Image (cartoon, rainbow, N blue to C red; front, side, top):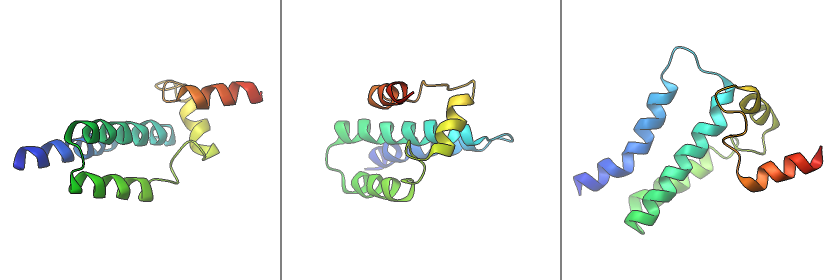
Length: 101
C-alpha cells in the first residue's frame, strides 16, 4: 500500500521540484501541466482503477484546466521559451496551428 502511494505521489513531487526554482517563467506552465497529466495517465495504465489515482487525476484536470493549450498567453510563452519551443505540442495541436497561419 505504501509503495503504491509513493508511486502515485511521485509525479506531484517531481512537478513541485520543477517549480521550486528561483526563476520561473510562464513558458514553463503548459509543459509542466502536460508532463504531470502524462505521468498520471501512465500510472493509471499501470495501476488500473486506483481510487486515489482517479481522485487525483480528476482534481488535476479540474484545477489546472485553465493552464492548457487553449490559453493563448501560455501557448505563446511556451513557444518562445527556448527550452520548449513546440516540443510540448501534440501532433494535433501542432498541425492545427501550422494550418491556420
